[in-house]
Amino acid sequence: MRLPSLALGGLLLAAALPAHAQTAPAAARYYVGLAAYSSYFQPLGDLSQANRNEVRVPLQLVAGYQLRPRLAVQVGVAYSGTTASYATAGRAYSPANPTQGTYFDYNATDTQRRVTLSVLARYTLTRNAAHRVQFDALGGFTLEHGRTFLRGTQADSVGGAFVVSPFSYHASRTNLLLTAGLGTRLRLSPRFTLFYDFTLNKNLNMPGYLPGSLTSSSALGLRYRFGR
Image (tube, rainbow, N blue to C red; front, side, top):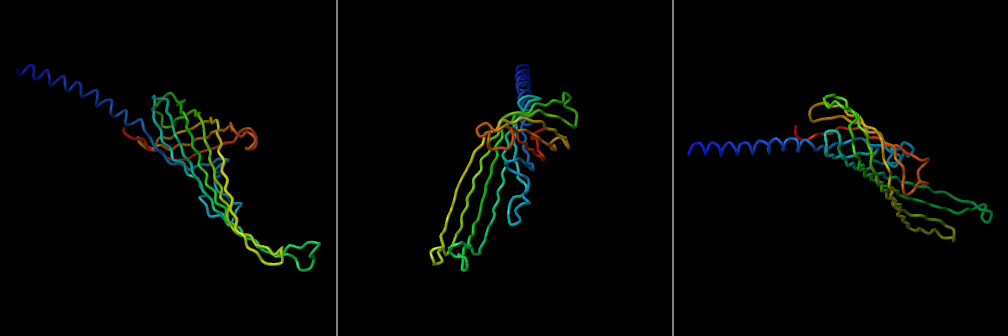
């Protein structure tokens, strides 16, 4: 009876070992990261507007899955938001009223929200996986969505009396881009990697909206790989 029991135990142990060996590599295929992002659609900072309270550095969250040793698919979401306030008041003169003029007062708040979603394939150009520095070719699609909300009050004395009127304006736009570029990675530890991606984008649905035929985007950040 001992021999069949030992044989059965050996079979169970042999079946358990491959299952354990497949679990660790599968877990190591996932990674996440956080990066500083910049593009024509989401520029890095906005020093031209002194009165803006904004997220000056757009942030990008990335998540990836390693399909093969040299091929991965990556999803990235970048966000930025700005809020600007405008105010002006004075008198406007016309030939009909050259001495007294017309008083006007304008106050507005402009809020903008921008989101960039990218789905890219990463193909490793470096053949030796043991090197700390790796180079990747990137390709895929990018979706940009922006919303603008302008609200405030405007007042004037055109009719002889001072009249205040509220106003609001809302607009949104979405762009689909074809994306390709290069990326480099520096392995800091078995789980942490510093990366930089540079891509060129071609607008597919609004080619006249962007200046020229191509625009660029870049991301610099740190990513974490799960498992061993």
